[in-house]
Image (cartoon, rainbow, N blue to C red; front, side, top):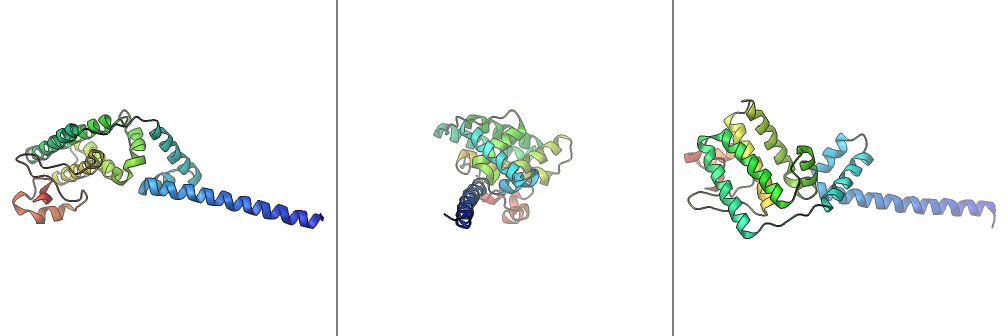
Length: 214
């Protein structure tokens, strides 16, 4: 075989290998984007490189696979649904307390599902594998809750915090919180603007965070 033919074959083989590696990498990237949604963009943007960001996301998947997640029983779902209705009722007279209770209730639900709850950032990382769709709601709720501790959150901020908590809460519960006896359940999407909430039901505008359910 002539030298030039050998060189051509080597180039062809290298090109095929490169194409395969590119396809594999593109497939992995597409899968990560599908799994993590907007969280993919956030992590990659915060990392020094796309490769480092994708490595972080794959590490999250590995850690998530090691968890022993547990489905909720029908009794647990009903108990949490009733507890959430009580939080919404509490908001009318004590919005700050209601948001604190919502945070505690959400954390309790996260724990019961089998997720670690020690460190906030670790909690976000493990939740992002399955609950990336509602993770930004949780971040926003947590940020408002922290501002509330310093007295820097308005009543409207607190209303939005409760709506944001509800998004992850319902996602973890596996369904929207159901109607409990004597209280109206929230039936709207979690991210409905507050102005629409107020316009929809004038008799509870400015008080109940679940005003869209009427």
